[in-house]
Length: 188
Image 1 (cartoon, one colour):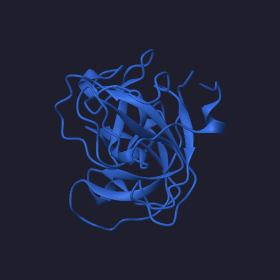
Image 2 (cartoon, one colour):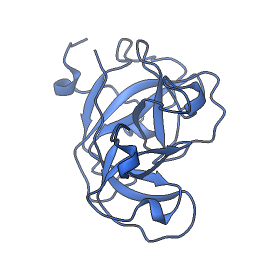
Image 3 (cartoon, helix red, strand yellow):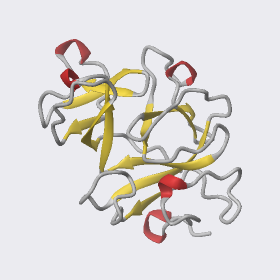
Image 4 (cartoon, one colour):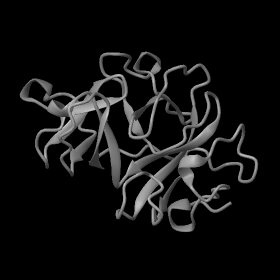
């Protein structure tokens, strides 16, 4: 297998990285943790008209029970083995400062299974309410559960996860808006 998969691409058995839910990497062992460019031409991540994203092959934490959804944050549970979780309590940094790994892009892998998260490009982002997405161009940080919020002055030491790209004026909880990811990519 090639060493630089950003140039050569990952094997995605379904053709859509956000619908992969493998018990083990049956067709391409050794790709766990690898990052690759993906065209998103068919709006696979839920954002129409945006192409050119980066996806990472990861394993979902075996004991995850939270119902994470498209646009929700994935957090690092084990960076050495590329294991992510949707539950801040299981993440490195815990419920006070979990380390974001990426955004869930679609159908999620079952607990313990292998799939993909989005680590760069325009993605859907989940927010607690409409007040969390007030100004386009503002920095976004982790808020609660797997949701984002606009960074305030009191959040100056929190890592920036993304920048708000489009405004969503919905007043319901768990709303989604387009965000430009701003994450350090952890790979090997």
